Length: 445
Image 1 (cartoon, helix red, strand yellow):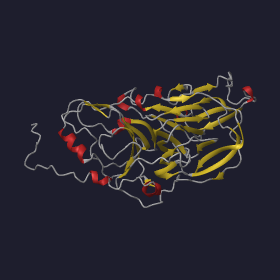
Image 2 (tube, helix red, strand yellow):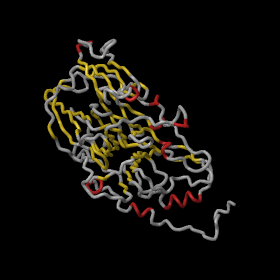
Image 3 (cartoon, helix red, strand yellow):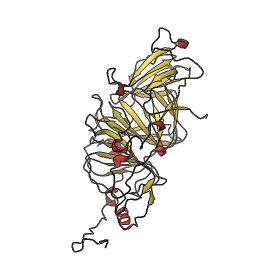
């Protein structure tokens, strides 16, 4: 496959046309009476028309046929996609999942849409407030099928296998340790090359943005220049009555047939696009004297709520870095959090739990549920010599953190059969080290 080209920059106003049709972008206006090459003009709005300019999102697409050319949508098999947060009773326990099992291609072909499984979520789709966490488990490419989400944005985190993603804006290749965001309403199809697994953070009613840097200054964390946007590419392909457009609308799946490929956009311009990002480009900020900075310093993208400083969802990573803090217990501390924390592991071993937390699995620590390092991590780190050390080399863990209280689905608690019923036992061996007659057992003072 030829190397794909991209446009650089987060949230930029961009323009692109397929080189096979030079001059396909109209000059000086969005909607001429007759477009170059007799194309159709179509606007895709990602925000209300009257949003402030700084938050207004829209793109103009110039396509061979408008996306309205399809048969009526009909309800289809919902699989394991849901927004019913009351399927099972709430569970405040610390939850951990073993690696989610990918179906074998030799037994059954499963593509990206068929392989979607909702794990947990909160909020209300109809009022555009909330989120869902999905797991995708697939072994086959989407053949003459595309998907779009009327409910929210998908932040896709591949863990095993690369994804070749066709969108109306062009093509993206997304591999483990990269992420991509397919924003609300954008049609896409995914090719896979092996048994493939990953995570999805879906947010309703808001879009992901770069976090404010505050005292950090102008540079750092995820830099805007490292986000990549596909360039225009079209296919003029007839699929008489055989191309399926799948829509997720109010949490349900619907399918419509059409005669042509939806990836018939010859040119586009705007600031509402899909994009990808390599997590290896993240500029890590860390404590260099003592104690911990809060894990918010590892935020890649945030989806803000209406409350200042409080997110519907943050996407946070724990990449390779140096640990140098003096007189400090360096692994993550014991914690009770007003936020909900879902963690996943792309590769390697997470520092606070070397054993049962495995790539392709996950954990959920719900609001105010205590969590922290297991006993082995605590004992080792408490006695470690505090020399500068590399942390998390060969590892990439991440967290979806939310101000909402997440409900786990029936699939997540029961059907998937991956829940680790013994997770709580990693803390049971913790013992008291209390020395009431010796204030400084280390002998440091």
